[in-house]
Image (cartoon, rainbow, N blue to C red):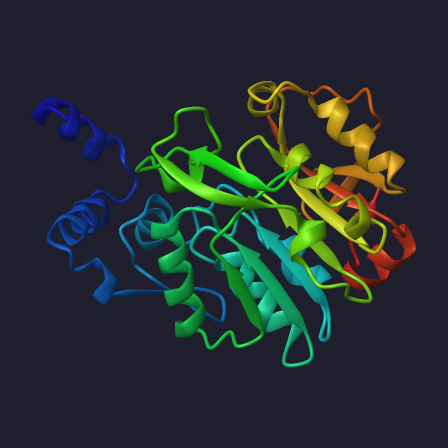
Length: 277
């Protein structure tokens, strides 16, 4: 990055001094000495894109967390596929409590190490973390290892090789799964295809959804929506705060979306007090 470009970035950035400090801490290896206070938990400032963005601006998340906080209850069994450094897994852990169980999957070995650190920092003893990719069939996959760690994905010729499992084979035959969150940068449908049995006893599914991401893997949003509908879910996307809009298999709005698949709408409303429209 040239000097003039860097100066332009600083001029445009809403918190330039914080940005400079973040880059200094990362380059010197000092960043993990700091933690980021959030809503009832802390994340260590590991040298990752997610950690840096939260340290610079804790309120500037791309994706909201209200759904996870409002839905999960003590005693729930919860699954986090694509856990990254662990923020959602920590929320799952705190909301489900000592009687709950959380299963957390992060395939990148480096990021998985940071996930373990954050789980330990927050005393998340009810979380079972796994350094595994999740897909439609067991085997081995290659993944990118980009500095933008929140955008790494399964890709031919990727920099790292990781084992891949299915949720049906990996998770124990628990009575019910209250919530399954999947954020894997485009291969969401492949994860669900490996969870046919698990979905029959799952109450709510949340997926990051975007046509461009999905086309990399040979399918579209309609395929994902249709798959969940055939599995017995009603499908929604988030709209304004604490509201979901029901969508059909023909949904094709541009951009990225939060898909929420609900098996029992009345139970979802009881848990969250969200509106379904």
